[in-house]
Structure formats: structure tokens, C-alpha cells
Image 1: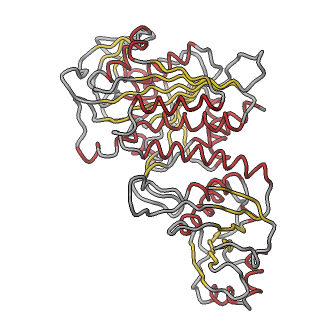
Image 2: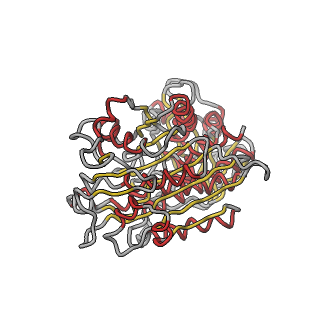
Image 3: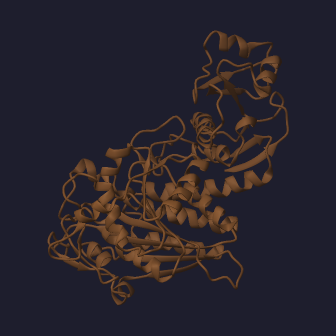
Length: 483
């Protein structure tokens, strides 16, 4: 997929389809007006007849407009005019792109000048890529060349890198667990070496030497051995060894629930329980390709949570790398147990700040729905920075409280802490409180992406399956730290 700029008029550009936007209850903008004039007012007639919808993200295909060289004109409703947000730009361009991707097309041109931004270009590149990795008859066909009218080359170049990194994350999450497991995921991380990222893979023996007893316990029932991967990007000047940002991802490549086994309907899509790790990998890929002048370290803990005679049990007491002991009350609360050791490894590099991402709790979806991530933190100023970055790129996150009262819920009578809270109440927060035990005083934000990381149903602007959410947010955070 390629993206380029064009200055050609909408009515004369030589492409298979052109995309124009139409605001609700407003005169036509310049591109729509040019199409309308070239066609002798046909666009106006179709809008008046309500054959073209101007409601937001509503897409209409109009074939054979006289006076327009492209065979197909696609209109996308922009709704009532309001301050254009990154989310609206992303979704509007995505809705048009996804409609066009129903069949293979060599070239399309977007005349959404008022929405032009990194997010709009990224939206057009993500929407035409689906989850149909192994279907003979594809449901979506990536657009070969996307032209954008107006804008600047720097924005297009950045958008292409971010979109490709996000689609890398989406592909990894959509891959089945017999293709992506700890070893093969680590191999994908090693590919970052070609971008100048130093990659270190810890195998089972190294994890044992490092006393990563929590991560190893979750992994011990699987035939697939665990991995922990450290990715170091040195973007600052060679003399600057400070690490302003560490990104940490949960990488449970398949989660059966362990002895606390999931029912089939909840286990089916657990190939996506490594979305946090895939998000970190995607972000590191984009940060390195953008050559951001900042040092960033990414760490992912990779395991399968399976069932066998070696499985860790309810009531077991684990000793994490930090020395803290954990009583296991539920083997399906495994992601936080894995992250306990990965966060401790992250601390050993003395980062200024940490963000972890994990498909951690169903409780977060109950609290915030399927489209919003929960943000929890030990530092309100750092959390606000992360939330502002998410808003800037059009991704949705909401801060949940971390009152000290919640600490009581993870106290154990046998060990230092237990891996679940007391009952089902506040489950997303008690999971974050567990993680907080392993970050010390370092400013830290935990993003529970259980809802938005994987969609059960398609939207107008993206296929079902992996969304690649928060790659864009992490890149924006890194950009801000580089300034």
C-alpha cells in the first residue's frame, strides 16, 4: 500500500475512485462543489432526494457521474460541523476506505482537505486491511495506491509509518495461537534489529537465572517455552543514556485460563491476549522508523497459559523477581502475574516513566464498555500526559481511581499479596493495584485495553478483530518526550 499527494482537480484525476466529504445542512465544500458543477448538479439532486446521506461516516457510492474522470465517486457524510477531532478524521476516512476495499482497486484519491491529518491518512490505511489472513476469498482488499489532495509530504510520510506499525500489531493479534506463540513472537521482535533497535531475548534458562518465578509459573504448563524480550531504541545523542520511557506489554499468546479454565465461548478469542505486547512491538517499530530523538525501551513477557500436570495451582505461592510473594487465588488472573516480573525487569533499566498495556480484565469492559481503555496510575501528572496524547490521536481512555482503600483487597493471609481482589467489585482497579506493587516510585500508567484491543463486530471504519489501538498514543507520547 502506497500513499502519495496529488494536486490534480477532483474531476480530472485519473484514478478508479474519488472520495469527497459532505457536511450536513451546509453548502457543498470545494471538492463536492467541483463534482456537482462538472455533473450539471447531479450531486445536489441526489442529496435533495436523500439518496446521499450526510450523516457522519455514512458512505454512498455514485457511479458514472458525467464530467468526472473517475468511474466511482464515494461520498462520506461528515455530519454537523464541529471542531474537527482526530477521532472524526480517522473514522470518516476509514469509513470511505473500508467501503472501497470491498473489491481490489489500484488507485483511489481522497479529497477530504478539511480533515487532512496524520489520523485521517492512518484511518484510510487501516480500514482497508481486514482479519481475513487465511481466507481464500478475501473480504477486504488493501488499496494499492491512496492519493490525498492537499496536505504536506511530512504528514503523509509519518502517517504511512504509523499505519504500517499499527497494521503490524493488528496482524500479530489476529494470527492464531498455533502461528504466534512465545518463540515466534520473539522472532518478530528480533526483526527490529534491522531498524537499529537492540533486541535481547531471554529464554527459559535466562528467566530462571533472573528468578522470574511469577512469569515462569504461568508458563510451566505449556509445551511452548516462555520468553521475555527487551527492545532498546537509542534515539537521543550517543552520550545521553537516560531512558525517559519504558513500554511494557502483556504477551499471553493463548489463555485457556489454566486450572481456572475458561468456558469455550470466552476462550475462543484468547489468541488476542497478547495484544499489549503486540502494541508495544508496533510502537517500537514506529518510533524507530520515525527516528524520534528520544531513548525508549520496550519489554514484553511472552507465555501460554495452559493446562497440564505441571500447571500452577490455586493456593500456590510464587516468588516474583522482586522478591515479593504472590498467593494464587485464580489461575485465570495470569496477566498481572506475568507483568509482575516484566515490570521489575523494566525498573532495572531505571526509566523515568513507565506505561504498561494489557488485555487484563473483563471488569474494565463492564465499567467502560468495549471501546474505552481504563487508565490507572500512581502519578496524576503522568497519567494526564498519556490521556492527552490519546485524545490528540483520537483514541479513547478514561482514568479510574486508585484510592489506597483498594490495597486491602489484594492482601493475602499467606503471602505478601494475592493475585485477585475480594470478589468481583472493582476488578480492574484491584488488578492495577497488584501491578502497582512492582513499579516502586517510578511514575507509571497502566492501560487496560481488554475492550478496544479486539472487536467482536466490524464498525463502519474498521473490520472486526484486532484494532491496533494505542500504538498511535504511544508514538505520540514518545514524540512529546522528544520535544
